[in-house]
Amino acid sequence: MDFILHYFERIGLFVLYIINELGSLIIYLWNCILSIFRYSVNFSNLFDQMSFIGIGSFYIVGLTGLFTGMVLSLQSYYAARIVGVTYMIGPTVALAMTRELGPVLTALMITARCGSSMASEIGTMKISEQVDALEVMAVDPFYFLSVPRIIASMIMLPLMSIVTSLIGIFGGYVVYKFFLGLNGTVFVDMIYKYIKLSDIYNGLIKAVFFGIILATISTFKGFEASGGSKGVGRVTTQAVVLSSIYILFADYILTSILF
Amino acid sequence: MIILENVNKSFKNVKVLNNLNISFEDKKITVVIGRSGEGKSVMLKHIVGLLRPDSGRVLFNDIDLNAINKKELNELRKKFGMVFQDGALFDSINIFENVAFPLRQHLKLSEGDIIKKVMSGLNDVGLSGIESKMPAELSGGMRKRVAVARAMILEPETVLFDEPTTGLDPIMSDVINNLIISTQKHFKYTGIIISHDIEGAYKTADTIAMLYEGAIIEKGDAEKFKTSDNPVVRQFVTGSMNGPIVI
Ligand SMILES: Nc1ncnc2c1ncn2[C@@H]1O[C@H](COP(=O)(O)OP(=O)(O)OP(=O)(O)O)[C@@H](O)[C@H]1O
Ligand SMILES: [Mg+2]
Image (cartoon, rainbow over all chains, first blue to last red; front, side, top):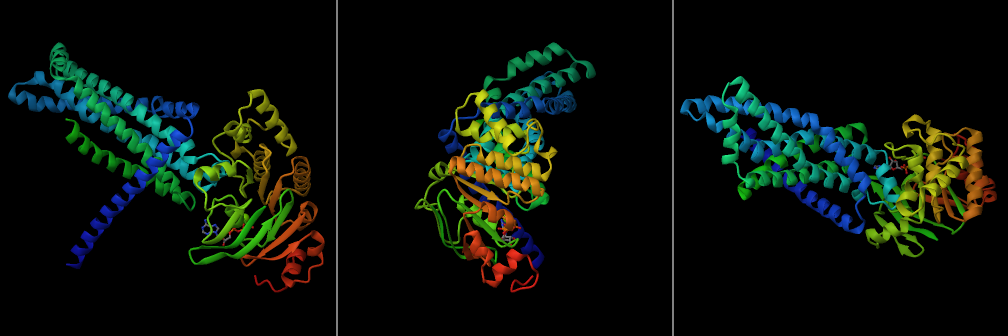
């Protein structure tokens, strides 16, 4: 009995922790937004971050899209064959990619690649007093370190999500035509027939939110670092875990609102 | 005038500053000495608002640092330069950009003027020709000197030095002490220096203050310290392990 109570207590504490974090995050994001209006955006910082998140993540995001699209095509073939609707494989792949997997997988991959490095970079600056040095030089650390990362992530996530989706659809097409030996024209035609513009831009709206979420959480966690390299490691892990949870949670909320 | 008034500060249960009262005169150099771990760096961080007192006030020209908002605090901070104990150089940009950083953030200078100022700043601390190196490629003492150059580049009204000569060889220590004296004569800043180096303190200071057990136990000019009959001060300036200070 005690064991079970203890278990529920742990769940309760975790929920409280998540809600508490959410509150601090919203205040933090609000402070970042305020600092955009107080100072203007530093474009050279912004472009550095955009190229890090975008160009730097191209391969990993492309590969993710490619294999996901290929697997989707293959998996839906087994089901579609039974009811004789293999012509629906194209739309299935395209819808899954644009509405769901493109944005979500891109966000998770970029969290792992860039979110972690945002948290550890800022965390290292925090523990080596570089953040203090910025403050003493009258440079707002949120403005200087967080804002470019959040804006860059917000801009690049939808773009990278398009890349993921396109490469995914291409991967699906390759499997459809060359491995399954079906008619490639049908694949493309059916996509045009069944996919609506709203499927695409709703996916992109999701990606914008995911970008804000991952960069806000990762930079926020960086500032929480304390106590040496172990502290930096800890906030980096927290940044990735928390970003992923919030992305999946936001995905559900946004899907139920948008579609 | 910078005044710390009845400042108390504890970390967890450890009391670091204990009803600290000290004032720093304008356009003068005050050297604060004290044993390692006494709270000298903590005191310095209160002066720039990086730490807030548990109780008491920090006044800068009669403005209470804890009563003003972030924007006003930032305006004030533009008048400060600070050398952190470990340098706190930005490790992702090179030495040139580190020293140029305050210039780029706060002044609209041409690239040529920035180069001229940074080069002369680095030259003053004996570090010509290392502009393109990264902080990680320098020795501890070199990083300290870059930090000194960076803190003074805007010719601020107040410069805080946290042990500017610790980790430097005796010759370089003298160079830095002389730089502090000559730049102080030149642009007349208020200098607050934390130091363990008694001889250097006698040379640079207008006023010396000693921090002991979270409060100031002696304050005055070099002569007063040399002839102090406070046994704690005597033990510290003579560097003896025998005396009232328990190790
Ligand atoms: N952020 C902090 N968290 C907890 N304790 C701290 C913190 N900063 C300083 N302390 C404690 O406050 C005390 C004074 O530290 P401080 O760095 O001011 O010493 P110091 O006089 O500058 O010593 P040193 O000459 O060795 O630099 C120490 O006992 C230290 O452990
Ligand atoms: Mg110190």
